Length: 407
Image (cartoon, rainbow, N blue to C red; front, side, top):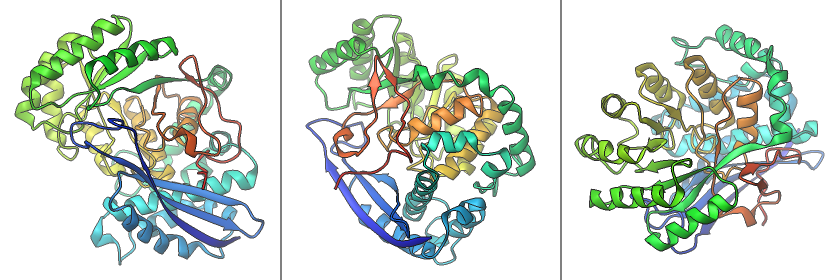
């Protein structure tokens, strides 16, 4: 059973220009970390991602949740974790601060992820294998489908899993091949042109066939120039994604996105405010066939449901250290599978956790194995850092979710 809890406030300043975008010019990558230690000495570790200030507030909320897990047996807890998740998400003393968003939801993510990590370690398997081996009923019992029932009931979720599990064996070879990655660090917002050019060439040498450039300058012509510069250096066969990090209002996005579309981006990411579903619908119709990608700042499955319902998201970038953890990530993945929209997670975890989750998405749910974002900046801080070879994530073999940090 869970014997003790530990909450850590971990902050990592980055190198010059690293992590910068049109909104976040000088981020400090930070984790609100929850460690759950059971009576056999096994420690489950989970975290939520922030950019510095306020990380301590997430830690404080996480302590409130985690303290309620003392004395719980992890097998009994996870057998019906959806109920625990629902109770935490609707905690009367916290719900006014959300619901299902903000500081308290990030705290829930850290605790949820620690529970999953402890469960996988207790069973002695990597998280991806635990997820794939669970029965459809057991997996759905770890999820709270509240407010999603108009699109996805418990019975429909189970049927969706069972349907895709029938063809699961045809997709297991990805464990040997590895999961494709894309380089999101070639064009941080504050990087000068020459550094971006060098980074593009280096990414291609490392085997990446897709990469991302940050846009959202005050002068739109600068974005257009840099986007065309990257296209020229990378060539026509490389997928290039453009990420505005919510910088534009709708009129601005309607003006600049058609111009950016001329360099054939694979997607345009977070063009405007993440809560403005209708603005994204209008923009998506304007720039088709270029698609929108969104989800880095979408806090919960309900808003993802709305984006899927209006059919404006070409790619969903749900992040398990941004929404309420692995359980809510699974709910969003199920919704996306129903709507046949690809899931390409944002990796606030630096890919440590999501390398497991995309394997589950592909093998068990039948999602297309497009690629997974790769951000290298915190690699040295993990006990079992992600491993990439020729642009592919190698399948993690360590037990748990790969989220143990060095202290």
